[in-house]
Picture (cartoon, one colour):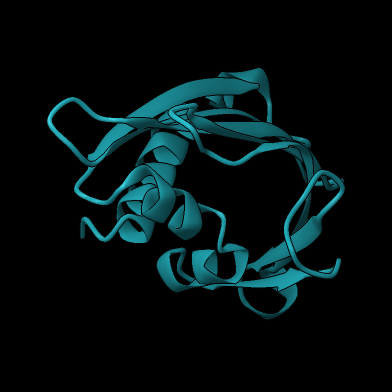
Length: 146
């Protein structure tokens, strides 16, 4: 199990950063070899389910996720979203908050608890490094920071 936290500051407003982070199909544009399919009708809310399929051919796996907490930003209150990974290969949760940033724009705090089935605890440290790098690049791409 790997727990990590990312923090990013964006030039975008809180509402725009929230929109970019919660556009689930757009995640496929910033995560290589990944497609995302939303399984429930719009708009996103608690109970929304989507599946990220990552990899190539027989080396691909599905990462189904469900939104279990959904509170869009508004009225000076930050937005919060929590996802639970419902897969058999990758499990855990992710949550993010979008706050107003000092001086304008927004500040994103992303927390993730990630486990990969059949991966020994000895691999947690390398998994943590690679997950922080990969999710950091994904958040940067979603926020237009690449």
